[in-house]
Length: 345
Ligand SMILES: [Zn+2]
Image (cartoon, rainbow, N blue to C red; front, side, top):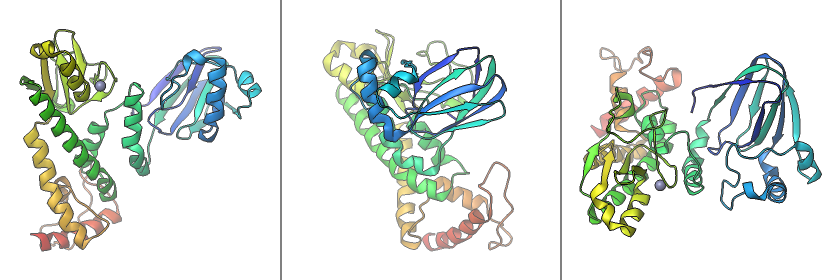
């Protein structure tokens, strides 16, 4: 998601009306070349925009939360204005940035050859909307740039994650684990016994040819809902398809004879998932008594232990490159939490 995209445009290169389905803001910098004309519609006007498009291009609108699929509709701004839609308009010159707010629609036209670059970003409070955002994407059969599970697991195990962010993430990780275990149990009840471990993306190295095809980024996508699959998936060698667990359950309920072609593929087995959650949940509960606003994962505990000065435990250590979140705040937190760890230990 945070890998920048380079855009090369020529005269009249036009982008369709677009809103990032993940609800992320993004920023675009025009490196060189001609200017770029932008039209924008803020989220609060999306209802009038929708009514206008339903009238002008009804075939492009769907009865789903994400009602306008990405990169499908080009509608001239003048027609939208006639339909009463409020638009903003700006011209971006080389060396200038455009900042697009979350859930705003944009469309742009190049006035000549140009090179620009864009990137998405997120503030920590975006996490509060993440579960709903990914549910909407899945229900609307839109493709997502990243798997929510992968994102949350990465945050939970990243040494640089702030405790406040971890506090937001942990209940979601617990919910994902519960949901995942119940789906796997259901598949087992349906008779799915074959399974195989998938390498974690970082450690995957060379891709095996016998595996179902991943897309260019190495992600698996559900055949039906296009969900980006990370924790687990079911392959069907008969149809050469890949399914998320709910859709695999649906398939095996309706077509039992596909059972012999299906296999569960997973990155974490049940034991690993149980171990992860079971270890940090008691710590989280204990600590919440001492420090109401802070929760910890096992990973965080490891970081704290790692990041103390063994000769003088009360002296915060200088930050280590790439291993710890830096700054006074984390050093202070480190000390406070370590004192509480004595209580637990
Ligand atoms: Zn699916």
